[in-house]
Image 1 (cartoon, rainbow, N blue to C red):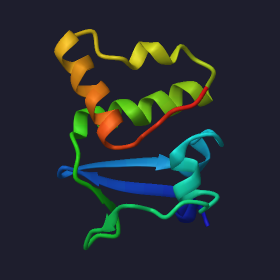
Image 2 (image 1 turned 90 degrees about the vertical axis):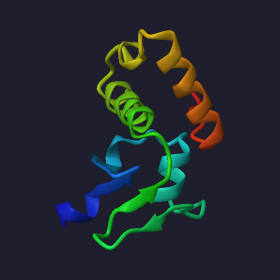
Image 3 (image 1 turned 45 degrees about the horizontal axis):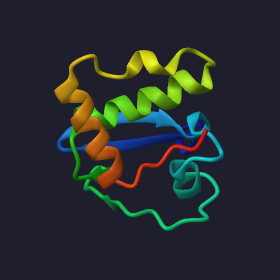
Length: 102
Protein backbone atom coordinates (compact mmCIF):
# COMPACT_ATOMS: atom_id res chain seq x y z
CA UNK A 1 0.00 0.00 0.00
CA UNK A 2 2.82 2.42 0.86
CA UNK A 3 4.36 1.71 -2.53
CA UNK A 4 1.34 3.35 -4.20
CA UNK A 5 2.05 6.56 -2.30
CA UNK A 6 5.62 6.83 -3.58
CA UNK A 7 6.36 8.33 -6.98
CA UNK A 8 9.70 7.63 -8.63
CA UNK A 9 11.24 9.87 -11.25
CA UNK A 10 14.22 9.36 -13.54
CA UNK A 11 15.31 12.88 -14.42
CA UNK A 12 18.16 12.97 -16.88
CA UNK A 13 19.45 9.71 -15.37
CA UNK A 14 19.15 10.82 -11.72
CA UNK A 15 16.55 9.07 -9.58
CA UNK A 16 14.17 10.91 -7.26
CA UNK A 17 11.35 9.70 -5.01
CA UNK A 18 8.58 11.67 -3.34
CA UNK A 19 5.31 10.93 -1.60
CA UNK A 20 2.18 11.82 -3.54
CA UNK A 21 0.85 13.46 -0.40
CA UNK A 22 3.63 16.05 -0.59
CA UNK A 23 2.05 17.83 -3.56
CA UNK A 24 -0.26 20.76 -2.73
CA UNK A 25 -3.72 20.44 -4.25
CA UNK A 26 -3.20 23.54 -6.39
CA UNK A 27 -0.10 22.14 -8.16
CA UNK A 28 0.08 20.54 -11.58
CA UNK A 29 1.82 17.56 -9.96
CA UNK A 30 -1.26 16.96 -7.80
CA UNK A 31 -3.44 17.08 -10.91
CA UNK A 32 -1.15 14.61 -12.71
CA UNK A 33 -0.47 12.09 -9.96
CA UNK A 34 -3.18 12.39 -7.30
CA UNK A 35 -6.47 13.65 -8.73
CA UNK A 36 -5.61 12.50 -12.28
CA UNK A 37 -7.47 15.52 -13.65
CA UNK A 38 -4.64 16.09 -16.14
CA UNK A 39 -2.84 13.56 -18.35
CA UNK A 40 0.62 12.61 -17.12
CA UNK A 41 3.05 13.89 -19.77
CA UNK A 42 5.93 11.55 -18.88
CA UNK A 43 7.00 8.18 -20.23
CA UNK A 44 7.61 5.32 -17.82
CA UNK A 45 11.12 3.87 -18.02
CA UNK A 46 12.08 0.18 -17.85
CA UNK A 47 12.28 0.34 -14.03
CA UNK A 48 8.82 1.87 -13.62
CA UNK A 49 9.96 5.44 -12.92
CA UNK A 50 8.54 8.42 -14.75
CA UNK A 51 11.21 9.62 -17.18
CA UNK A 52 11.57 13.40 -17.26
CA UNK A 53 13.95 14.76 -19.88
CA UNK A 54 14.89 17.90 -17.97
CA UNK A 55 17.72 19.23 -15.80
CA UNK A 56 17.98 16.96 -12.72
CA UNK A 57 19.34 19.69 -10.42
CA UNK A 58 16.38 21.96 -11.16
CA UNK A 59 13.90 19.11 -10.74
CA UNK A 60 15.36 18.32 -7.32
CA UNK A 61 14.83 21.94 -6.29
CA UNK A 62 11.20 21.71 -7.41
CA UNK A 63 10.66 18.61 -5.27
CA UNK A 64 12.35 20.28 -2.29
CA UNK A 65 10.06 23.27 -2.77
CA UNK A 66 7.06 20.96 -2.35
CA UNK A 67 8.58 19.28 0.71
CA UNK A 68 9.39 22.55 2.46
CA UNK A 69 6.02 24.08 1.59
CA UNK A 70 4.17 21.05 2.99
CA UNK A 71 6.19 21.20 6.20
CA UNK A 72 5.40 24.90 6.59
CA UNK A 73 9.08 25.73 6.37
CA UNK A 74 10.74 28.58 4.54
CA UNK A 75 10.60 27.23 0.99
CA UNK A 76 12.77 30.08 -0.32
CA UNK A 77 15.69 28.31 1.37
CA UNK A 78 15.75 25.76 -1.46
CA UNK A 79 16.34 28.40 -4.14
CA UNK A 80 19.87 28.49 -5.58
CA UNK A 81 22.06 31.36 -4.42
CA UNK A 82 24.06 31.31 -7.67
CA UNK A 83 22.38 33.65 -10.21
CA UNK A 84 23.12 31.30 -13.12
CA UNK A 85 21.53 28.31 -11.33
CA UNK A 86 18.53 30.47 -10.42
CA UNK A 87 18.17 31.52 -14.06
CA UNK A 88 18.36 27.85 -15.12
CA UNK A 89 15.69 26.91 -12.58
CA UNK A 90 13.44 29.71 -13.83
CA UNK A 91 13.77 28.48 -17.41
CA UNK A 92 13.19 24.85 -16.45
CA UNK A 93 10.04 25.73 -14.55
CA UNK A 94 8.70 27.73 -17.50
CA UNK A 95 9.66 25.17 -20.13
CA UNK A 96 8.49 22.20 -18.06
CA UNK A 97 5.14 23.81 -17.31
CA UNK A 98 5.72 23.16 -13.63
CA UNK A 99 3.57 26.04 -12.44
CA UNK A 100 3.15 26.74 -8.73
CA UNK A 101 0.15 28.63 -7.47
CA UNK A 102 0.20 29.94 -3.90
